[in-house]
Length: 199
Image 1 (cartoon, rainbow, N blue to C red):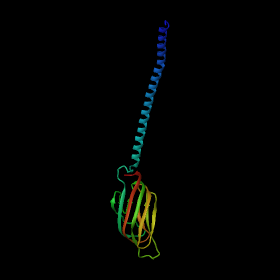
Image 2 (image 1 turned 180 degrees about the horizontal axis):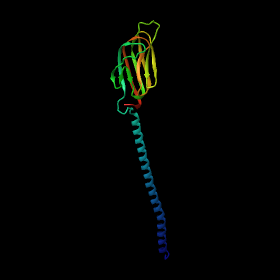
Image 3 (image 1 turned 180 degrees about the vertical axis):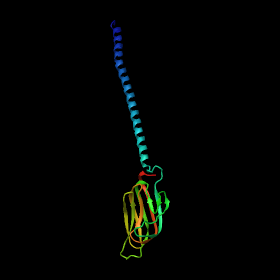
Image 4 (image 1 turned 60 degrees about the vertical axis):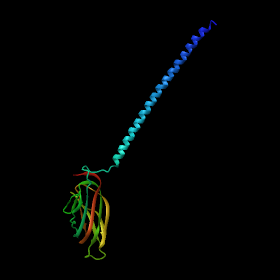
């Protein structure tokens, strides 16, 4: 019986010794949980920021690109009259922002252009088997050349739609390969994707 009081303090000391590593382990686990939570919050914030950047870039890329002055160059021309062989038709703009001088369409922006030409051409002076060529002609500082041609039979409808790459300072004209009468020719030119504008 005399030995019992000595055993209790030993058990108490032993329990205190066992409790200290358990408390240290608990504190270490709590610190690990806090660290894990901080990592999780940091990763979530990075993902949200990345997603916001991707959305911003996606919205920006979906907006149509326009020249610096926010006007897309275009013109719509209607022409009825005589066409003289090898001479540019005297085109005048009905509506649009592209200037026309002496029958020439003045290109100010490098880029892809949608070209549409529709109408009816008569050339009664030629033989039945003869054909007329309607030519879209380009002139710049150095050269002059045909961009595209459409062969037309007498009283035939012209229906030409194409995409062309044109440069700033190009002049575009419309010519026929023989004398003809043009009825209600509709000529549209619209810039699709600008690269360089000389405004």
